[in-house]
Amino acid sequence: MMTSPIKQEVSLLSFNTFGIEAKARYFVEVTSIEALKAILLDPDYQAIPKLILGGGSNLLFTQDFDGLVIKMGIKGIEKMREDNENIWVKVGAGENWHDFVVYCLEQGWYGVENLSLIYGTVGAAPMQNIGAYGVELKDIFDLLIAIDRETGNQQFFTHADCKFGYRESVFKSELKDKYVIAEVIFHLSKKPQINTSYGTIQQTLVEMGISQPTPKAVSEAVIRIRKSKLPNPEQVGNAGSFFKNPEILKSHFENLREQYPNMPSYPAGEQKVKVPAGWLIEQCGWKGRKVGNTGAHKDQALVIVNYGMATGLEISELATKIQASVLEKFGIQLHTEVNIV
Ligand SMILES: Cc1cc2nc3c(=O)[nH]c(=O)nc-3n(C[C@H](O)[C@H](O)[C@H](O)COP(=O)(O)OP(=O)(O)OC[C@H]3O[C@@H](n4cnc5c(N)ncnc54)[C@H](O)[C@@H]3O)c2cc1C
Image (cartoon, rainbow, N blue to C red; front, side, top):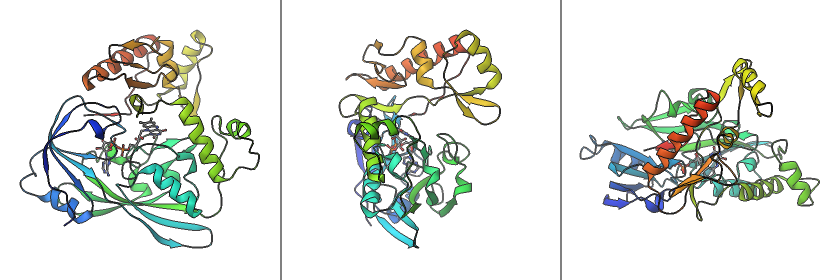
């Protein structure tokens, strides 16, 4: 069976993009569905807490993990079926997301290019329905194969079963901690699907001297924008956006708008609008402010960073302070996007 030995007292420092030192009591990497089932059903580990780990780019460790960390190493990209215009591909949960995007572009499979340079693994992508630059995972998702953590049974989840929402899925709500995503099937297009309407993609393409963009050019533009806006976790620890953009009632927004005429918003259904959390945090004076070893990033207030020696607890305390100040000033509750362990 393809399972690495179970190790003890393993440092998680190199397994999380926040760069937090925490230890796992037990740690194992699984590279096949059989090995995953075996470890989930192993009587020696049945009763202890388990944490499924992808690339650790959406996690904040606030303490050592007194249980078993299962690192997803299931690999493989397999063509399932295709016709003249479409292709369906099955991808192992442990594949690196951005490498998968690059692979698709090389093969001439389109639809993922706006999701270039998102950190982490394919298996974690449905968890929060990753999204960027006008595209979400749900737009290219077909089906996933998950393993029940209690029984080891394999189950298929259709698009509807996953209940995708804004940075949400059934795996973060009703079925939280119930399943391990093992493989994901994507429905991609063989015809270029250019989507440059969001943010500064169009402008960046112009700066790159491109007037007739290909999907590869869109990917390069997205990479360029992301590199200029977001801190690189290899240089300064972070997990991308720490909070979700809150959705508030239109009536609440109209009231706030009287006091803050420049408050930005985006439509979010009939009764609500979405307000950029970064703007709210900036208005509360957090942007670029250092608090001990942590702080809200100087260019993007929504990203909390580790300036080197921060503990997870320090970061979560700062997050709580930020939430309190946004609530006090605007009456808006921010919810974390990062999973706090
Ligand atoms: C610089 C930066 C920029 C980012 N930008 C974006 C962005 O634009 N859009 C966006 O949506 N996200 C963004 N993120 C967040 C992150 O890239 C995504 O959430 C990504 O999907 C996390 O993948 P991961 O493998 O690192 O997950 P992890 O951090 O390892 O895990 C995240 C959660 O999913 C669970 N999990 C992981 N794998 C599985 C599995 N196979 N089965 C079941 N549960 C699992 C974990 O237990 C945990 O609860 C960014 C992060 C960084 C560091």
